[in-house]
Length: 283
Image (cartoon, rainbow, N blue to C red; front, top):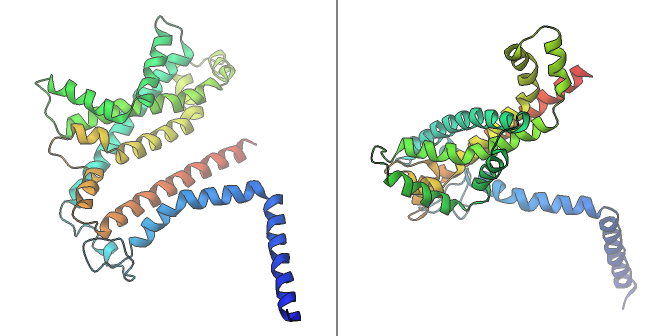
């Protein structure tokens, strides 16, 4: 073996030792990095293929870069109405579920009443029940209610039903660590119950309410199983994607998915920034 080959072999071993030593010293950091790569890789592929120019119906192989998918995001028939229906259902369901969930969380944390333990269990049931069971159960319920027409109202009722549990859990977690002395101080200074809630309680639990609102919206706009059982002839965006995937996957689907992801990311960062500025101002 020549001296050059020996030096190359030793150099390769040195590099491997250095890499292994780095991995041992930063095992947790490396694991976290690999985890986030694994988690975000599908999202990165969705974003990349929103700029793809496929030669056929299926958007599975990279053919070339184009911005036409974004310029003509509604070129596929039915996609505009599907995304608008999903947004409408998502906004209404998240607002209603967050309002009801906040009141339920306040009742469970602040007051003792008969059936409180049972109510806690019932709140957690939709979280632990498979979606196909929820969808089939709601379908059976609506079929036995002759005055209910399948479509917008059944989708909205179903989404509010399973979003309430997430709202209750999110707001309740904030209320458990809430300092009641702040409310007592406000009432000692002459504020009544409504003024105390509006000026003291509500601002302090507002981040939890906002987080609940965003969580419910994300769950609602993403739901497929429960919606499939109770949509009737209405088509939400997840149902549209499912139908489109059977005959082809247009790149506009990736465009809408990327847009939803970017909006959710911006709202999340804005929420974090607002909370950080509040903490800075309080300090």
